[in-house]
Image 1: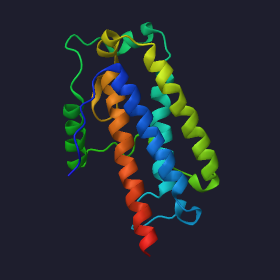
Image 2: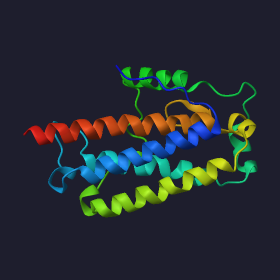
Image 3: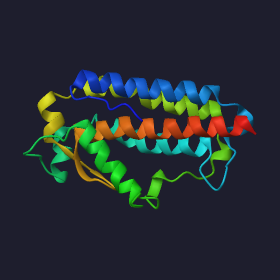
Image 4: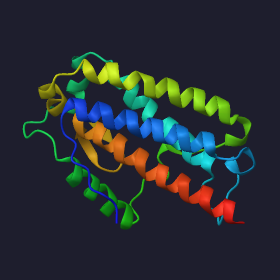
Length: 186
């Protein structure tokens, strides 16, 4: 059974995002090179999971530096943000119903074999390093006010999108750990 996190404040979000990036970095660094690109039972390899994370977190890090006027096109939340646990449960429910946006454009891994593990890690660490300062530029109220589109969950507040980043990272970290364990048993 997985522990449920209680995350809400900007500082808790910054800490949790950083922890998720650090944990994934450590896990990928410890993945033996000979299994990094290997697939098992048609599932994504460690490299493909990592590539997916890079492609899904990079736009979020980038959008955090945009002028608030940019967000007006997506709408304003009058009700604030859902709790971390609620949003995570909604996402997991949609995944369990087979509603994952697997044809979601740039978030699908391809040609990962042409990229070294070191280059993946360099890109990942560069993206991760941008989050703390960019989140810090947001007020607590603006995190709950401005929205962004999500391919499965619809329009989310910026706070909710950061929640998604945390539990999405953790979801793929668990997958990468399982892959490592599976290949090391062979």
